[in-house]
Length: 283
Image (cartoon, rainbow, N blue to C red):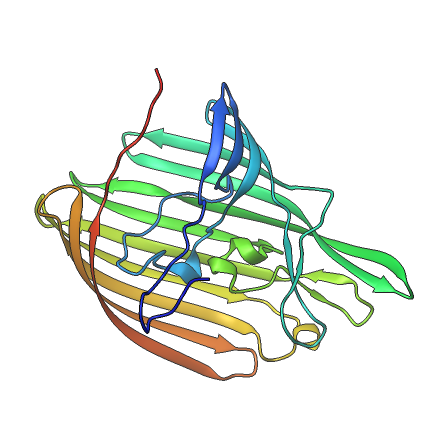
């Protein structure tokens, strides 16, 4: 469906956000309440990907002042016993529950959020449908702090057991199966720090570092799973008008698996972006 690079570079359109708000309620698909939507300004899409919470999904959210609570899509990602292709359990009766508190002031903005989720595994044993589960939980803290008149520091730190698809664009599974098909939640910790400096009104630079560490039980996961990943980047971005930006960026990244093998890549990117920044409001 997506085509290829030989002729047309086709891409299918898709619905990213579709929701409505009424009073204090939001219903539909948008950014997870667990995600603090303050990202480092990278040329690479979703830069610092190994250190961020990033997810959009269907949910019901209630907001009261700085407080938010939501019930969200509960899909579970699992690793088979001693390694193998990822397993996905979509059916679940209990949603992921997120609570959040937002802060703001002259200094900037920040948020702290927590999540509780049930990691499900459904399987057939002797013609009977069975289900095992484990408790997943996590926290995230992030924000943007003003530095001087124009600069800012952006950060996020997260951790827990069973974060899975919420963390690092799904680099790590939420849990792993034991020999008896029980579910064991996988601990992980991740984060990023980014500094944004404005040289002039039209020229700026961003320096970002990020990473994730995973605490696997290798007797369950095997040795071919990610143990840690890190990246660092620096860029320079020029905006002749506010809606238009041209940027050049260098990134270096590292990854290591439990078997001890590791690798790195270096990437030089150039990009041009136009931000339409339009909205439709009904008065």
